[in-house]
Image 1 (spheres, protein in one colour):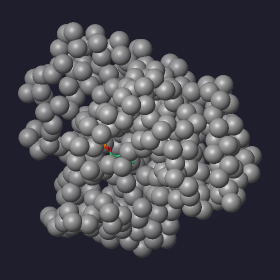
Image 2: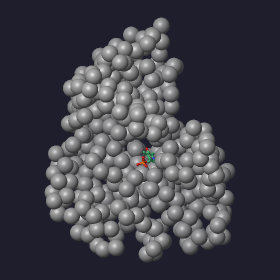
Image 3: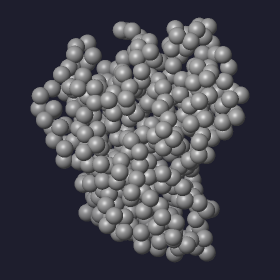
Image 4: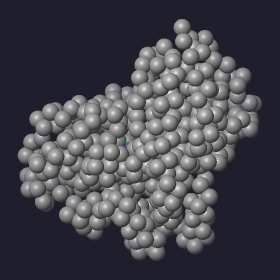
Length: 410
Ligand SMILES: *Cc1c(COP(=O)(O)O)cnc(C)c1O
């Protein structure tokens, strides 16, 4: 592939800021070369005033769009009252937030945290405690089944059960108690469950894994097996939940209700980290004071932002928009005849375009056309714009995407 005109496409201010970041930041990311300075809705502007359509949405943390006015208003208003109490005291915002959240999930209890990884850790602790105190698993013996290709976050426990070598290498020793099975393979799950299995932690669609959609009926079968064998079905909906796939939860596509929802990303409306585990009383009720917590979890600012973020999803019908425009976007992408495209897959506004070559240079070419997308798993371009996107904006993207995908074919 020819050298891209990356340096030339960038303004001098962006270049300076990028160099500053590269000088002082640990090298744990390989960002696309664009320095974003402001944003509104689906659009972002770089430090030299170039405009781009954000087709990543911060991995679905921006489902409501950048700086949604109702969410910013809630945040500013809350910031002018009180931002943090710690859970040593009650605060006025947390109760109303968790009530709305539980009602949306049709669950009894919620445990608020901050980042997605913390919510996953919380679900792991809840499942183990439930295993020992409710299911009767001998102490220290609980095991949790996870899937190959998973992405559940970056803590040492979580990367310990990743199948991705680059997530793990050099970071051990890792926590025991997890077993990997192939994703989408119902027989593998059936055979992996032992009397000590307390939970099956699964993404309804694997986002980071390359937008992998399991076979139809998989989640329904998973639900049935988990119920039969008394294993908690823990759905990591951090990326695919809250409207992204055209349903409120991705599990809804198969009318499946998990035992625990793990939520994050869009729960914070793109402005603040808010995550939670939401579950029935007989599961989340296993925690007692002192057994789990977070200084910032459930803080007033997070709760006000979370409440507004959920209200925007509901009131602006973002789930319906994701369903309709996702189907439209996917259909239009499928009409593009490009030899480089191997497969187009996904649901709602989570679309993966799998290439038969590495995707990085295509993402760079898209950027030069004014579209910010990021490769996942080397060869997949993920298109996941904010759910507030309009048909016109999708139509604006399509010829540009077509140009990039076809212009480079050999
Ligand atoms: C992003 C993500 C996480 C981790 O969330 P952080 O806020 O980055 O800790 C966990 N699971 C899934 C499916 C995710 O997409």
